[in-house]
Length: 232
Image 1 (cartoon, rainbow, N blue to C red):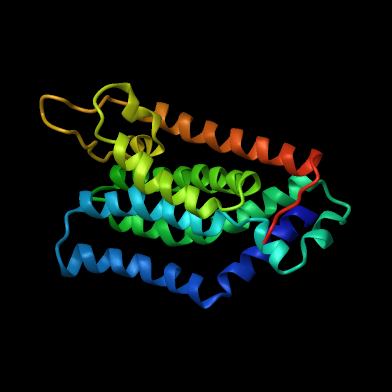
Image 2: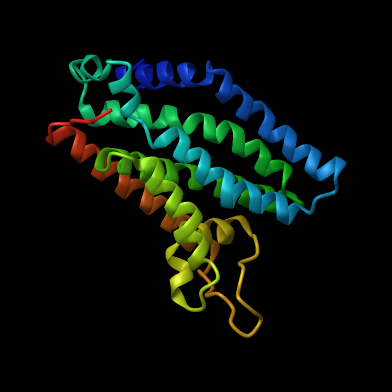
């Protein structure tokens, strides 16, 4: 096993060993099942809840402090002095942060599906959405001292405000591409002012993948080439 895989597995097990994490991992799929079967909540509403809110907010909770936890636990120096590229260590930590989000949201996305095709699209959207949001919030955690507040403002203010704006502005949000890839309805101000169509599903998949690669690449460059100093 490569050192990077070992590092990712170590931190993933550590994350999953926390009671709060396991509560999300177990409770979220169960809540989705109850909403669909016990309360007859439409599949569209469950899908919107999972993709639009839970994926980004859980990604923020786990991804925003990818290396900050190392500072608080005083293990950052240990990891960065191992015979392993710093970018690989960061990627391993990022994968470990994305793991609990994926484990919780992918089954919930399956429950929200009304057909096999819907299930495939929702699972793909949850997976790519988790990757994009976790990598973006992880990058923000390297750039700002309080990434959680910035992330909350992004999810609850920026994307919430732009999602119903007519024209191309609504397509600059990750939320619109999550909906498009997952086959969910796009909100609009009115029937006379519909939101812009992001295009075919594969365009949204490409956008989410591009955001992931760009954020991971930039974050890897930062941890590899710059002196990383994070304040508590």
